[in-house]
Image (cartoon, rainbow, N blue to C red):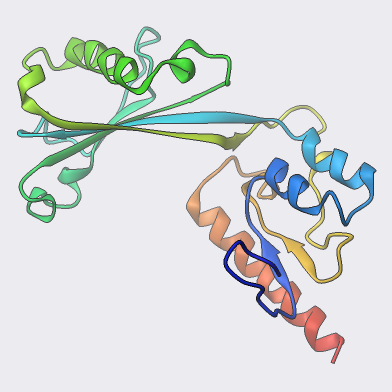
Length: 203
């Protein structure tokens, strides 16, 4: 297996990136119809705004928001789970949104995305002033959530790929579950067992 830094010897490789990324990696080595199948599954992107505050917003760790006018699925105050002392006394709050690449929020520059977030957050917490925001960060992931559609089961690629000793373990394969770390761990363990069995069978 080649990396930008070195070539690593391996008996097998488990690929865990989103399927479009895997498609780019295997395109020179796999049949075209297989690569096209990997690209067939669509994804939502994710934008996450992380705020460092000088105070706590509330005593709630994970606050789901069901207001259709609020552009995020929830307000998560991480330092109601892990104490602020871990972060030099700063209170860490993040807001996450799954969205298509064409969404206006996805296309906003970071500074505008933060201002947009604070504007909506003040609807819930009117006392949140700009001078109480010590820092803000915007994170984007292009392939965050596989889109499950009708007939999705038929689109899921097998664990074993056409490339010798290359296996897949991705979030797109945990169906009928939607998403989640627990299911990804389960998938990883199942694939690891399959790889071990394949290598054992090959001697």
